[in-house]
Length: 307
Image (cartoon, rainbow, N blue to C red):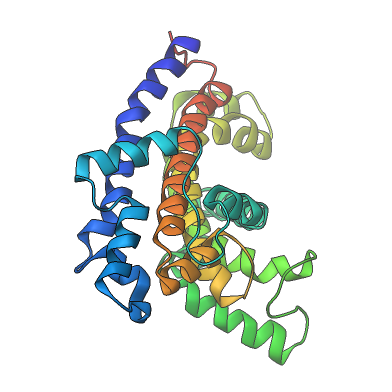
């Protein structure tokens, strides 16, 4: 196991290196001078522009600038926000709990709803229940998250008054954002669970379990579902990354604090150090989650060993 972890960590290094190159290139791929973009209309003279370029290190060759950026990032220094003048890492860590809360709530909802719909569709194949479950799953896959969020606000907050529309704090304010965020992932998981369950239910050991007189519920949930969840773990890990990125839209729609909303504000303000830091931090978290997902295989299926 430890050998496998070391191998995966080494394999993740090129990915993170590529992400760091892309993040660093954000400033230099934009048209015009990055210092000019940062100053905007505040430029009063060429001397001011040259001084800012020198302060930010833009006067050095690109490979030197990248080496400096990578060295600071490896030491945990992602720079300072141009807007607040606070350390970028401090800005991210201050907003991280809210984003993690929303992401985990959305993922939990997606897994529960997706597995329930997928199992119900597989065990009632060809019936109206199968059609209904897959129709709900198709709606989750097809429906834009921002539109769903606005519709949920309209019905449950404005029309019915059951839940608060926007803001932070309390479980009630988490329900609508988590539902909006998790519904799309639930549709993906439901379709995969149905496909995987239909395949597992045809395997001989399931037939043998039924022939022994075991209850259908025990056959489905104790014998079939556990083996059907192997490919589902992969998609859950991928959906975690998608949900983490989806918080950009959800936090904006529901006026919640978090990394996603912080990123939107940084883009609007052209706060490039903050944008760079958020993208690099999110990519690192995504790589780490995928490693944990791979390790989760062994816990789900004892036949899998990392030797």
